[in-house]
Every structure is written in C-alpha cells, then in structure tokens.
Image (cartoon, rainbow, N blue to C red; front, top):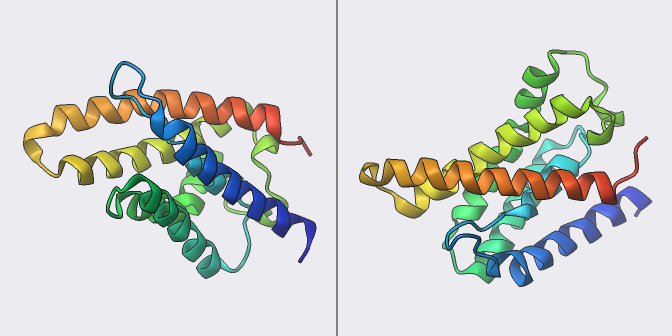
Length: 168
C-alpha cells in the first residue's frame, strides 16, 4: 500500500466520521445541514480504474446512509457525482488532454475549482432533496434547500481544502 492509498483511506474514514458525528447534528436556520463528506470525491485522484472509484464512492454514500438512517439517498447521489466528475471537470477546464494522473484540485485555478465543486455539490444536493421529498409539489422546497445547503457545503469544503491540503 502506498502513501496515496493510506491518505485516501484516512480521508474516507475522517470525512464519514466528521459528517455523522458533527455535521449531521448542525441545522443552521432549522434546515441547512452541510454535507461535507462529498469532499472525498473532489480530492480523490484520477486513475484508470474507474470501477474501483465508483464502488468506493457508493460505499461512502452507503456509510453516511447507514449512520444517518436515510435509506440510500446519499449512496445514489454520491454515485451520481462520482460518475459525472470527469465530464464536469472537462467542461469546467475546457480541456480534453488533461493529465489526470497528476491532477490536484489545488493546482486548478481558484475560480474553476469553485465552479467544479459547486456544480457537483448542487447536483448531489438536488438529487438528495429530490429523493427525500419525492414530489413535484415540493419543487420550491427542493430548490431552496439545494441552493442554501450547497452554499454552506461549498464554503466549508473550500475552506477545508485550502487549510488541509498541500499545493503541489
């Protein structure tokens, strides 16, 4: 096992524990609950083995579902953003020949990193709230919860990435 694998394992465990012990109990204004565990997907290095990444991303969501008693909605949303991460990054960076083996979120220009994280976070949260409400009658609640929760999630993730990761 190399150093990068150990870092990703500790990051996985740390983000799940941080989510279920701390952030699941934060309810800003009564309904905003930041979902910071998805930062693992943004920080996971690009590799050729996409299958392993998708399986571990599903397991990440499933761990949060298990401790949050949320019935699989986190697993579905996390798997979705893990699957579309590469195409979204290509759209945001407007390049098709990126060397993804050396990719690091800290090496991307700050504005593009925020755009990348924001788009995936909004998609993740919209999926979660759509499954949670599961009704077109609650569309305004879905959109408002998505936008407000996404704002606080992105803010916390960006601060965490800036403070806790090395710039290469």
